Length: 258
Image 1 (tube, rainbow, N blue to C red):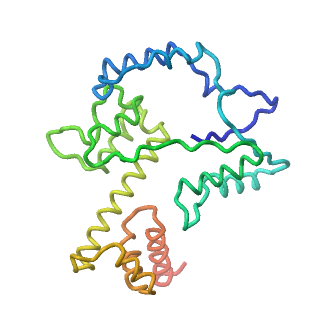
Image 2 (image 1 turned 45 degrees about the vertical axis):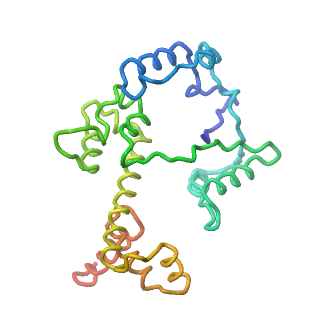
Image 3 (image 1 turned 90 degrees about the horizontal axis):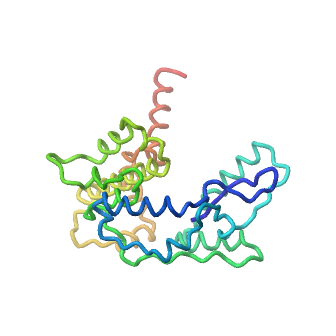
């Protein structure tokens, strides 16, 4: 986790979001184990639990790097944030390598941040029950109401996320990470559906492979790339979607004036 924050005016190191209360963490774990179906089999490691502070900040235990931006006005500052908050990985690099290289440059003379080890077997988001509820235990405290939970009728992802955004207590709408998770999931699933339709309509050969498509594009076959781009118009928020809206607006102006 990369934490980005402003330094306070008095150069204090305290940061309230990282104050840890051991007793509260323990109560939360025990409550989840007793009430959440996906936590009932977990084993609470008391040794690690006792290593947490009683009620102090753990800010001094976090690795950090400082970037000093002096005499920036608000416009320049916003521009810096826009350009650096999400680094664009080079096309020849994997995302983790690009982020690691960015962190290395940020560290300067300090030791680089260790990249976390990730399991080699990713979760299947279409068949794993409760993966959303497990990822957001504060939003799904009992583990119920997951997207893949058993229901009388099937619920489409779009109406599922919309219902939770409008939920009466507002906790889903206030949770920024969940909102982006919902948006990201819908766009990726829609892209998969569009891709399947494209393959059925345009690639009649059942033996065609991904390497064959890549080879066509590398050889300068722009026709297949153009068709793929047109199929992306249905993905709300994508570049193709907004290009289509721009063309619509341009046609309207030509027909009825500005």
